[in-house]
Image (cartoon, rainbow, N blue to C red; front, side):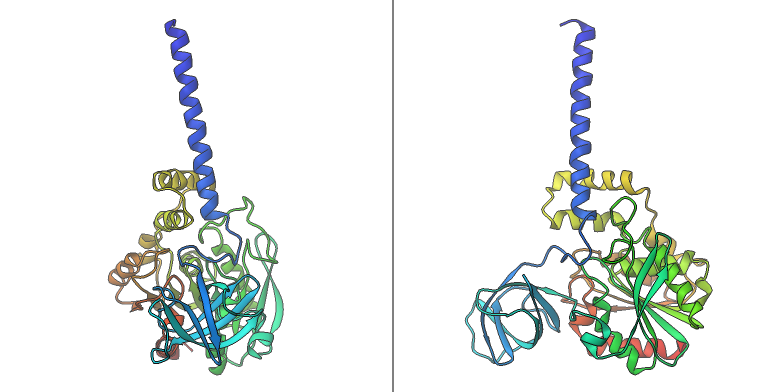
Length: 375
């Protein structure tokens, strides 16, 4: 083979390999960033329902089904709420019995395949909680954003921001807590959610672009009479809250942040999402590079959020070492860097964005103490 021909063949081969790598990386990043809003997060196994009885359900025994606390339980066309493990109820060695609080959709019976979710409720504030609300539209950067406004007398408002794998029904878990304290709650959808504009590239940005919809929600709340704002976010919603507190043009109205399982390490969370959705380990670096190429560079949110000129308000931070989506260690580091403002509550045996579920009483007491001086 002539040298020029050999060189051309080698270049062609390299180009082919490069194109294949780009295609594979694009596919792997799609797996992590193109999941529709409300699609359950990967990682937790599906459980089999073995039996049901008065106020109880028997499930396959696993780390997931043994978790303490209260969770939603969903399957195909099914949604229920389960409470604590009932240790004293007879069961086999490979099963666990939990209290069945209620069945909201479908029928839960032997053979049902279900998984746990932090989202307890389906519906709206009035249909799920019996709390009157107003359906409003927030003028967003990409178009109108639907939101629920649960009105109350105080002028300090809470804006509640759901994260990955859930919808704006997830914040309904804590709306009754705020309502009992006469705090108005605004629960917006944001780009990519059902009823909201799509992201221009069709991808989730793990909060890096979505935070601008939080800025729009703050402006809307101020327009409606809010004097101060507390942002309460889960997962990417928590990351959006941090970005808004640092960069929003109306950040002076933000008086506090409640962060549950914040995504502080963009690359680690993307790798975890792709891995949990069965992208092979050798392809994970390609997924990260492809995602960065498609969504733009992502700064170090931990460093930016902890900077003295960025973080100016008190932060209540809930996170735990059992989160396999957003690593716990950056939350520990954030609390260590800013002990003047950040209070970390470590919650064990709780998956991503489920810190309230693991112990609602302790979670809400921490929120009560945190919010009292901010109202």
